[in-house]
Amino acid sequence: MHSRPILCALISTSALLCSPLRAQTHKVEAPENVTRAISVYEWTGDLTKPTASRLIPVSLFINGKFEDAGIYLAHPVPFVLQTGNVYSIERAGENIGTLNLDYARNITTRHSVDDDPLTAWYGYGRFLTPAEEAKVTSLHTSKPLAVVASIDEPADDSKPQFIRRQPSTSTTTTTTKPGTPTTASTPAPDDDPDRPTLRHRDPDDPNTKPNKKERPAGYVTPPNTSLNDDPNRPALRRGVPTGTLTTAQLTGMPPNLHQSVAVSDAANHDPHIFTREWATTSERAQTLNELEALAQPRLAKYIATNKLTPTTATKPTTGPTFATSHQSPATPPARSRTRQPAAPPPPPLALANEELSGYTLTYGGLPTFIYTVESPVADGGPVYLTLVAQRLPSGELQVALASVTDATHLNRTPWLRPIDVVDPDWSHRASLLFELRAQTSRQFALYRLTTPEAEQTFITGIIE
Image (cartoon, rainbow, N blue to C red; front, side, top):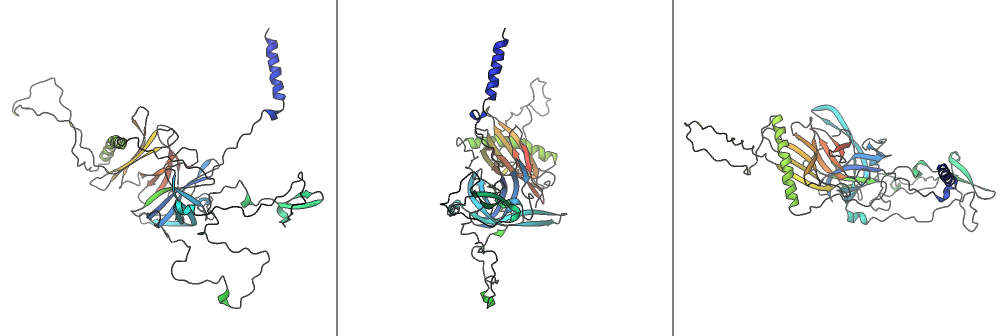
């Protein structure tokens, strides 16, 4: 009995499907093709006027996946270290300056304890403060762009027509007006709009070296009457030439080394600040006490396992006190069912060089804390501990990442040193960037917190 209504409904649905789709379709924006490079900027001295510096490439997010930026298209120079690339020096997503790359070097390092040499690419350039960067003028089009009419578009005789001679191997034939052939070249590889690029410095930057004067094809330079009149003749001068790089190349691992995240993107994005401000004046002190309580047993276990001699804290302990017995030592203790008091807990370990930072890795995400501390020991050391914890809605801290090692076992377990948090793929979700420092080498790794435990999403090759 109900077959007819169902059949009518099917016929009506089929009629709608067979109707022109023009009235039902809507424009869908194509997903953004992100090309984003993450590096580590290292320097000594003041940030605004470093005495020595270098840029270490870490990751390149391109074609929807991560690549090792230090070796990606490294012929002749890695893609992320090309001259003219501009990096934003950041702290938790906030720009504190820019680095204009001038050149790159492939450095080989040899150590006496290891015969295998380590090679790595480093970039070198000029650091500009935000105020100095703002003085650089933007690049604007100086004249209207040439337009080539298509076959379906009639030509306008009132506008001037230009015909350029192009190579015959890459030409296509179009028509500006009936009966008038015109040649237009296909885009060269460098003009491909889909070709990945990173941010480049403004050609109008006064600090940029001027290009050589362009000359028309077939130009011949006549011989000069004097060698002193040759504009390409090399000249020797005393001092540093004006406009050249004055920052020295940073080498080795000096004790006064500073590190920061460097980001270069093909597009300009609004900044996403991941720093989390403390809610109250006492919140930081309370969080620090909680993290110290989580660190003490981990440090004690590592020291006992590796048979190290710990150094106890100088501050007095606040453990419970127990009443002494008034019985004579010769008198045997009376039997009692009362439970004997437990032994007092061991004194806390000494803690030094504590650092605590708070972040919000996503919009509305859990408060995330990175805590590092050192515990001195009598034989070698110190012992290094790194904790990453998140504050749950219940109020307790949940440890997402814990790493502990000491100075004499870095080749077995590297020291996990936090650099900063950064958005490596422009997903509006920050990752944790760490340096894994061994005895004579190091690596850099990205960790993401999408589960209760931090997941390593990328790690570089081994460098100096």
